[in-house]
Image (cartoon, rainbow, N blue to C red):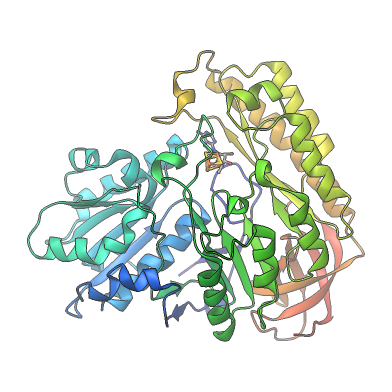
Amino acid sequence: MGKTFDIGLGRLAGTSVSVSVPLNEAQDPPSKIEGGAPGTGEVKAAGLGDSPCATGAETFYLETFGCQMNEHDSEKVAGVLLARGYKQVESAESASVVLYNTCSIREKAAQKVFSRLGEYRFTQQEGQIIGVLGCVAQQEGEKIFSRAPWVSLVCGSASYRKLPQLLAQLEAGNRRVTGLETDTDETFETEVTRRDNPWRAYLTIIEGCDKACSYCVVPFTRGPERSRTSESILEEVRRLADAGYTEVQLLGQTVNSYADPSARKMRFSELLVAVAEVPGIRRVRFTTSHPRDFGKDIVDAIEAVPAICEHVHLPVQSGSTKVLRAMARTYTRGEYLEKVALLRVAKREISLTTDLIVGFPGETERDFEETLSLLDLAQYDGAFCFKYSPRPNTPSLKMDDAIPEEEKSRRLAILMEKQREIQRGRNERLIGQSFEVMVEGKSKKEHQWSGHTSSNKVMNFTSREQESLGDYVHVKVTAATPNSLVGEKIGMTEG
Ligand code: 5AD
Ligand code: SF4
């Protein structure tokens, strides 16, 4: 199958520093089907229980583009369809339903979807349903039907709970169906989620985004912010722990803007602690944090509770206050650096990663230099670097002073090279230290294993023993590259 399991930061593809480590076929993490009671009472009321079932012959093929939120949405979509009697298959050719969960954050990602859809124009089987899900679906809506008339289903993330009904309508003879509401205050919770990794579970705690950064399509494609109740989150974490998961990753476009809608009004930092205290949970991660809502209470929680991972992903986007203002990021360079200072004085060493955009309209050479100098100050452990990509409906689309493509490429290359050297230095400092690593993959090379540290660094290590995937081991760092650590196992860690 030649499958790779992304063990980088697992974020949006692009010019990032994440790495994919090949896994042996035998070592592919088996996926788990998660069942049981849905997270909240509201879920049952939402009608999933009444949705139609497949006859048993239906199969689906699901391909996912984009971010972790999309990956996790796909796990839920698969869970919903499996629970309705559909079987998942590995190739589009043999599926009765082909679904693409799409990303539109940058133009390239959106184009990729249409070129993939173009391929299916010629291979579509008689009666086969082709559906577009996710951000491109939400953004383009019914226009997809005219651009790709062989598509019969278009559904954005806020409407996934309706998928079984939409498929039933198609099977009943409707030619085209859509689910495009974004103003729902429901979050997509499912009775069953088919999780791709048996030890690490993703959990969306907040959907949508209210931040309105001037370059970003997310507020349009994923709608306004909606948080799940703390009670429903904790109930799901307890179920996950009972099912053997030891790591949970809390997801949200702005995860730390979490606002508990229940009377308990748990703060995000309190939620982190409560999740970490669930028996059986050894690691809690969270992504993505917005600098405006990032406070000392989160750092205090990381400091106090070892199970909360020592890693914060805090996108800065630009080092220039002028550009940040044009981006409507709601903080200045100085305010961002104050947040970084909170992390740097913590007793635990907390790794810091970020997202950066070069070539935003009006970005001068001086602004760009401010971004470069911010890298020196922030000393990031990783950075996802992007060229600005104009997106439909966004305020920055109409801004003057577009930066030529070649200039964007030049700035991107300089930025990445600088960050690479910073990462090299940061990782080399760790040689001689030892870290707990979750064993996540076996390399084709003999005695070579891989996993992540609590700080989310990729560790490729040697062990002559037969390791069990999902175990936690101690590894001493013997060498480092800009993107990963190299080490030797020195022992097991206690559960
Ligand atoms: N152009 C380039 N990069 C973008 N991002 C979001 N929108 C755009 C855009 N229009 C980047 C930001 C964000 C990450 C998920 O994608 O850096 O943090
Ligand atoms: Fe987009 Fe800004 Fe919201 Fe992040 S915070 S999803 S960049 S609008």
